[in-house]
Image (cartoon, rainbow, N blue to C red; front, side, top):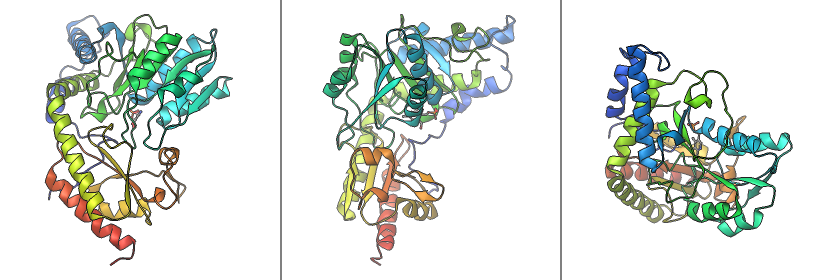
Length: 382
Ligand SMILES: Cc1ncc(COP(=O)(O)O)c(C=O)c1O
């Protein structure tokens, strides 16, 4: 078995060979600044606009609706704070849910300090947000609904179409954090009624520190970074050309074999899930069984600490992550695991295993064998 066995693809992914090759000329000879008028700049400007077209094509959007950013966190911050600021005359109420990424939750809590009101909706035991709850939470002063496309910890895919329709009928803007879903699932902004969508390249075999925000034509949003005239004056700063080129290559690759990849990853994840549920006792699968990201599996094992299990997995050369955030040495239960109501007996023993297009059955067998052995050890069964 080649090590490490990397089963933490929701945290980040390995850049693929074609991404590195696409970026290389822009790290070497094509180092120009896209804002300059001479040829070395023109080359960069051209590839910048070509990548914008590629991304727009992947979403059925228009190139003018794609704005490059430094990644998911910036896109979420921009969407939420930007819309809140632009529409504050209409109202200062935002709707989101309790299992969003911190980039959304902390943007909302920042706004609360400025006098905005935020409704954090509950999700059910699979992490699913009921669209009816969203409908009931809308008030005359609601300006934005922000609900993630799919959850990063438990993989549950949210009812984006229904929520988008509800938002549209009520005249409220709808943002979705699609960082875990974009380039993993087919997403068309013609089909999904979203007004803003965040994505990040390092989640789909692209480079870190680059992403984009889709902003539907007609949506008013102020600049998030003030300075030069880049990105139509909306997002200042010399463009990260190598990163943007790498993201474009990763998008092309993801789009070219998406259906096959989804089928393959889903089968492998189901194989892993069934094997774990069958071979290890007192375990629960977190999230929805079917309506989840192809590569995501999250488990809670009764009677153990997830953090201790991760250490033992690491000793076996396995990269996975926990469902609990470690804070000043104390192991806390993740807010997502809390929100879906996992019992006290199971919640501390939560781990997340996330596959990629490169994961294999052999790796799954190795990981399950390691889990079985190490969990028995932690439970003092051997
Ligand atoms: C759902 C979700 N939103 C936002 C982010 C932040 O993205 P980035 O790392 O590109 O800032 C992540 C990354 O973990 C994520 O999973």
